[in-house]
Image 1 (cartoon, protein in one colour):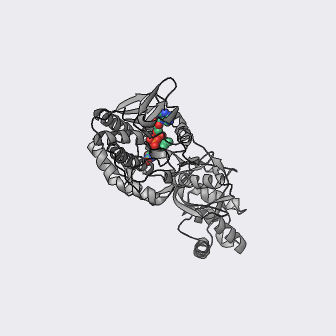
Image 2: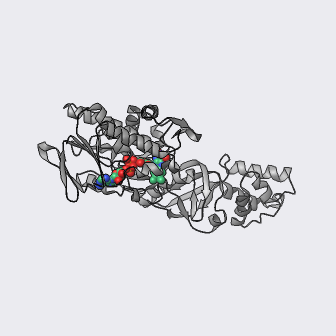
Image 3: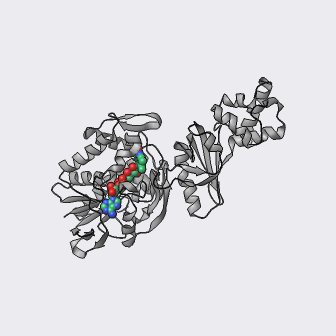
Length: 417
Ligand SMILES: Cc1cc2nc3c(=O)[nH]c(=O)nc-3n(C[C@H](O)[C@H](O)[C@H](O)COP(=O)(O)OP(=O)(O)OC[C@H]3O[C@@H](n4cnc5c(N)ncnc54)[C@H](O)[C@@H]3O)c2cc1C
């Protein structure tokens, strides 16, 4: 066979389609361990698949060198992805924060369009075929081996994803294969995962959501501050701002650092601004209770619970607070410590941070610098996007670049980056 693609998720299927279009007549086979590939596409975006975002830049990603990410994204932009899906019959529309979803509201349509396009382009899909190892086989190409079978392909694309939601088939086995071929795998952690918290504050607020800012800081770390909706849950906290912050907590921990996560309930204000606001409110509404004033800006349950965490009675008049009490409250409002004990892990994570080192692939072709003839795409690389369609865009863009690389390689041409 000409091209073996290991992994038939978003990146693998897109690579197959793009490569088949560039190389008509080429024998392209996608191997996937799952009996029904594409399970992650089906569950994505709450079953609606957030295919991409109106604006995607390298700044929406973490992981390896942003110049490499930028170069790959520029080769196949979000607009290109929207046009590609439109051509496959999946029209997209924009929702909040630039997220693009299929008009039908169904992730199933996205998967079906990809599978149909691959089949139309002559790609063979071998589902239920787990690849256990890959070995260079000299002039013949690269040997791809399963439990009781083996095939040799002229070129191989690794598209096995990260470790998030392992029941969909992405269990990290592909990372071990890459490592066995000499690749350096940056240690992985969950990303876009809900956080588990100590204490009982969150249990009283389960189901309550509000705008917040979350900052992650620690010794030797550049403080990262993120803003968005936070959702309190029975185990801790979730919602976009927490999911986006989770990778930073995990990366600090894996590096053995002390890490603090702080929450601002009033993200538009700093400490001085909150103190001024409390003073103004005390003057304007001298008989109003703490909880009443806070409830004008926060959910009532938070307004009732937060003062207690700093030993203040929510039914006390704000105007009666001492300076010390007012400062304690202001501090709780802008820098409330989130006592994170962990995340919900890969079973609940939407992405994986870490993966194959980005500087080990050619940014113009996605070909491995370590193992010629091997190409790497998608989430198995050291790239993780924030919430909002960015991780799929990385899959589409890297797939496009890999197909370009496969095309060049088949013509015996090179592209230096
Ligand atoms: C719940 C959830 C919701 C999400 N929602 C969104 C969203 O709305 N928008 C967005 O942009 N991103 C979303 N993501 C992230 C997005 O799904 C992934 O970034 C993307 O699917 C990665 O594509 P991939 O092809 O690299 O890997 P995967 O989709 O993980 O595909 C890898 C494939 O490789 C196969 N495989 C693995 N190992 C082997 C092996 N050894 N042999 C053969 N086959 C193998 C697996 O079975 C799998 O089919 C979500 C993720 C989750 C978990």
